[in-house]
Structure formats: C-alpha cells, structure tokens
Image (cartoon, rainbow, N blue to C red; front, side, top):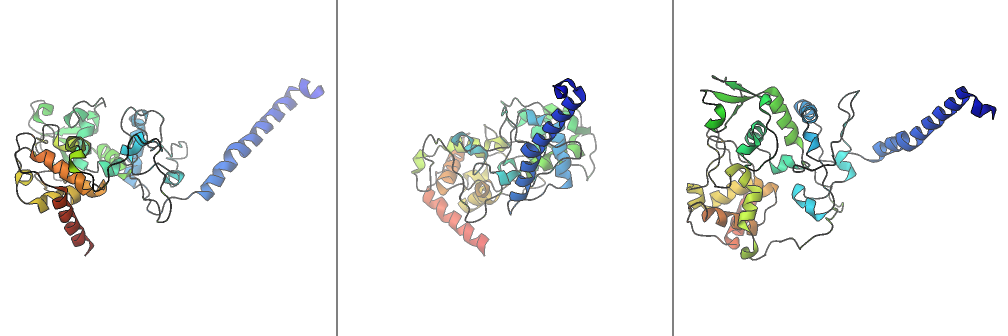
Length: 333
C-alpha cells in the first residue's frame, strides 16, 4: 500500500511502463520495418525542387483532398497499374527533424488519387494551368485555384515560365501569367509521383471485387467506348469540345492530323507524344504510359475523327495494331 500512497513511486512506475510499451510496440517494430523493407529497384529519390514542392503540397492543404494510395479494390484501378505495396513508401524520409509526414497516403479522397499522377498527367503546361485555375482545363472541378503561386508580368523575360491562359483570366491587361519558383517546385513534386514497376518475377497484387472483366486486346471495336476513353486520357488537355486551349493545347476540331490520311503520324503522337514548342506545350506519350491497346487507340481515333464536325473515315483496330507494331520495332532498334 505504501507504493500506491507514494505519488513519486507511482508516477515513476507509470512513466517507465509507458516508455517500455512505446519501445516495444512502436519503436522496435518501426526499426524492424525499416530493416526489412527497401525501396523498389526503380525508385527515384525526390530532387531538391520536388522536396520543396512536397512541403508546399502540405502547406497548401493538398493533403486534405488527395490520397496517395491505390487500394486493392477494383474502383481504384484508374489511379495506378496495381495496388500499392509497402515498398512503395520505403524510400520516403522525414521532411526535416521536427516534421515527419514522410508518407502522404491520406484518408479522404475528395479529389483524384495522386499515386501515379506523374505518369497520368506529366505535362508541365497542364499542371501549371490547372494550379492557376482548375476550371480552365476541367470545367466541373471543385478544386480551389492557387493564383498566389503565379505573377502577372507585362514583359516576361526569357527565363520566365509563361503560363498560357485564356484572355479572360488576364483581366484585360497586356502581359502574361508567369509561374513562380513555388509553382514550379509544386509541379516538380507532382511529376515525381510515379508508381514504380515491381521487380521481374514478383507477383503483382490483383484488384479485388472486379465489377466486370477488363477489356483486353482482341475485343470488338464496337465494345470500346471511344468517348469514355477520350474523356479519360485526352479531354483534360484537348477539352470536351475538342478545341484545346490556345497557346497551350492544340485543337482537334478541324485538325489536319485528326482528319488526314497519315495514320502513322497520328498513332505515333498518341503513343509516343509530340513536342510542338513554342506554339504548344509538349504532349507526353499517353498511349505508351497508359499501355493502351490497339482497340482502345482505334476507339479514341474514331471518336476524334467523327466528333466536333470532323468527318474523316473511321479506322479498324487491325490497321492501328499494324502501325503500333511498326512503331515498336523502330523504337527497339
């Protein structure tokens, strides 16, 4: 009873017991995890700009709406090629001595998951326009704008990164919107978010609770929804009306590429991208990054060739597959 009546002994014992539990339950398992788990072979550590961008990502509240975890359920399939595994986060370190936030997995997903956004949307131009005002590129977006990450300059210098926005956003002034260092650092972080492929021989986790079998190569082209594929992979830049964004993303409406006979060029742009600077921003190789099949590419092309007043002849998956095989052979030489 003397022990229970002595507050010094009682609180000392409670503190030591709590310390022992902390070491056994939290610290030792964490050290064990660090020793057992290692980053995947293709993991790339954050650059200095990307690390600063991560701090901006946290400071501007992006973590409140965006997760960075692809769960192993079929509804998460759009966010990555596979469900996330522990090794995806093994290379992440503390932001500094006082702040941990090594992983930003999140729990609420008001906006899209960003686990693989560096592959889904790698365009510098698109990301800058989207940060300046999301409604410019995604009309129904509920994401807030971040205009304080940009400056208005009447005469930008050659070193400035100009953001091409519609004239309505220039407030009638003669000048350009220029990205600050903070905007470029935040985009550098977003572009660094890429899902790394698992090592050869390691089984890929499967998505659970699939609603329907995924469409594979060989599916009839009629079953492919070209409008949906366009909305998923192309619409954010070229817009719902196919008119793009002047100075940033070219129009597909009345395009000589879309309506022309040079299918090899058309497919090459979709699969491997195209750099039309300085007239437009560089287009990434969406088809290759998203592993689009010949059926899917054909469906996208047919949608573009028959929409917005375009009236070009439709193509077949067989034609597109032949071109894709030819392009793949050239890339492997």
